[in-house]
Image 1 (cartoon, rainbow, N blue to C red):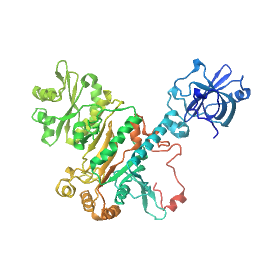
Image 2 (cartoon, rainbow, N blue to C red):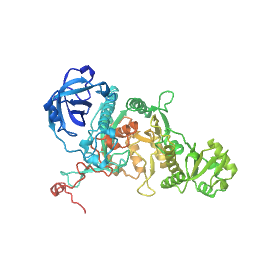
Image 3 (tube, rainbow, N blue to C red):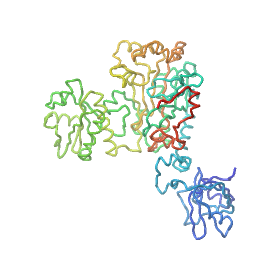
Image 4 (cartoon, rainbow, N blue to C red):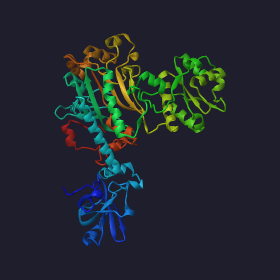
Length: 596
């Protein structure tokens, strides 16, 4: 090695010893002819000193050093003077008096400041263009370190429980996983394509058929979806796992201790909603949507949504009455203290938010001054109806009650968005709390978002319907519930999972309801059917997103910084200037022409 120590290693126990350090010039200060430099590497900072009274040649060379030059220095470890101690640094008790300096490389002036204490964050586009410089910042070094430690912890956890890590293919087949595929044209087979896997779903199920029994993988996944705050463009990594001969709660009992340990070890958060037996809460999808207006509710605060349809159905408020007559519902939510907190402008903005989710408006009642009710709808509802509503929510002075009236799903989603925004505006999303829960019993089917009136899979098509073949034959498809579940933390979905459909006849019937013929299923999933015909065990699993988990545990602003070389918010790699055009020769080899 070119060095004897790293820049985060020396302590006062090494005083008097010779040391050779290498690193980047982080900061330079001239004090009366003596040059001080903070030398930086991934491990930390060490102050080095060039004193002309000790070594004139090294001092003369040090006068040329500039920010981000790469140097090798040798000198003696000495104690810092008492007025120069830096208790914020692990190396803050010492400095190194340099006797020999070698410049290993010079550097242009960096396009942005690397000294984080100045609290100046460069434009993201510039940082991503020069990502190799951005990565030198301690903040990003920490993120990469934490990511490595979490993945190592996960591997150790599953290996200790007799899981086997298996790498599944990257070049796979196109599959209806719910997102758009990344397609890879085949040179050898003109007109045919591979697809990058949206998840190792089919492969891990085939591993269960193959008798692997307990599988996991730190799996790369690829989806051509628009980027957003909690979703990196194009690719992400998940902790993929699957188990044979299990029921739903067996999966839960493997995953819950891991998430407790990761929360305690890799965040400052305290888990606030564990049950007495140290298990996580479980609520059904229907209950989550009804009570919280979301299938990934944030339970760090209350604001429970309740039905008031029975109370208002006979009132003189025509808006509510007509909705109920047409088969809709009226739900309401009390925001404790919101009547005092929210201005007219806040209420207007919350109304716009509800409308963006399909609501026609957002009715409200403010309780103030000894129980007086303030709202344009009070005179239509009448005193008795208003009194019953206030009593149902135990509302008090300073509260505000919001109302939604529409079809059940629309009311849930609009009030859920308002609930979430109220929690943020009231400062109730406490970064020191971790509210974990399972959302279970997702619907098997829903109406297609593409083709009006058509039934399609609501989520994962390979989930086992509760009730099996009997449910598929006898129930309305929209009433069929799957053995499907999500892991949720503080309003973020971190994993989806299911007990799988492992019986060929049930699989054919499930796809038939979604409009797929037997021939369609054989063409797309013939390998799955063949495998299940040779003795597939009952199996299930899930796959938490590693990057999103890290972001939520640490309250990091952007999922992109968790990647060493991320895409930007428009899905571009500005460092490599991709996506980019390719030569015509390459397109010809793939039998592709570009449609302008």
